[in-house]
Image 1 (tube, rainbow, N blue to C red):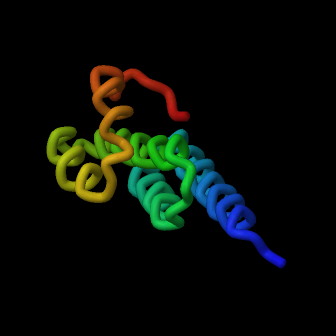
Image 2 (tube, one colour):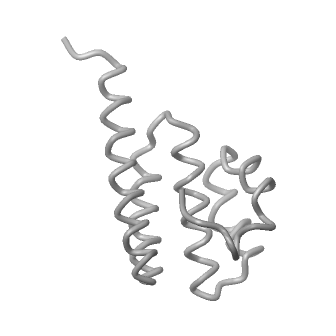
Length: 102
């Protein structure tokens, strides 16, 4: 019998793979591809709030390095999807241009 926890683990593992793929593309400065993988990880809709926050945060950072206005990205591409990133984003907003990926 498969339990709900098994699906949650599978979703988290899948989202983690997408996050790692996005991080690889980010390091290669392929920001559009990084955004693609972070978005795929977000769409997995895992229950791990910390992982989701990292996906949203990393995606916002990739948008930033594409030259997109950070405020526009925050409001139009992150906050409309989920409020789980808000506390994380507010605490790290000042570090976006100098931070490392999670």
